[in-house]
Length: 346
Image (tube, rainbow, N blue to C red; front, side, top):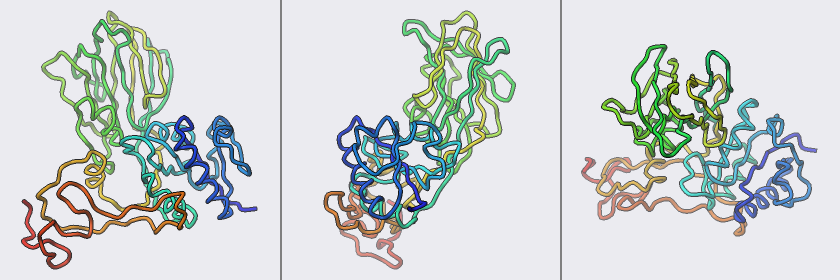
């Protein structure tokens, strides 16, 4: 029996994710790889010959990789299982934006092939550790890959908080809440709240007030060595702590939430050497019409295995006005080294 194993995690509430999981399991099994599925998903997936695992961190122990079929929410759920073991996550986006996913549904066959042949890289993403206290008593501890958000629990009343950086008070805010995010989370909740986009290789923490009534309520970028604290003032309504939109804790008046760099990173499997800039353009559909700079040819997955049921990898190209990697801008002859004639940015 093969000693290789892969854990498959799927959003079983989506029929497409169930079908994709079945095809992935079939492919991996044909390659002699032991496939694990979670006990809460096994009945919905309905495959035989798989190893059914409890929905705990033990499910990912000694697995080569965790293939996640769904959106970013499914990947965040899988991250709960893998943080302690360090097993890399490989996301296949079956949702909307899918910023954490590495592959799209059209690339499924090629993605399985890369897993079978171990042709992928692994990168580490910074996390944050979160502790909630009140009068020195620990109310709870947790962690987040994207963000920890302190939010008001009562719609009709504003939350009153004071923010602290490195043990020193910064400002009081009357607000809807405060988001403390990682660079990975800069394109999630913090982005929606008006925070900056931070490249993943930049190690930092973001502090983003939510709808604050204050003259100084700008998003902040602080050192990864800093400690951030948000105190819910005693005379304010109760609040709620959310981590990655999954783990929650009620915060009574007077509670204090402390955020520091996480002791354990989350590891993501990468198939492409695509620059983060290209990822932003693709995921957000950013307009790049008129750009005439050097065009690069990024790594692409290997060709599909030939099963049309799984889907073929799409050809490169196709952002409005930018024909895609390997093609000069429309109407311009290629210059040396793949650069468009003129070679200057518009």
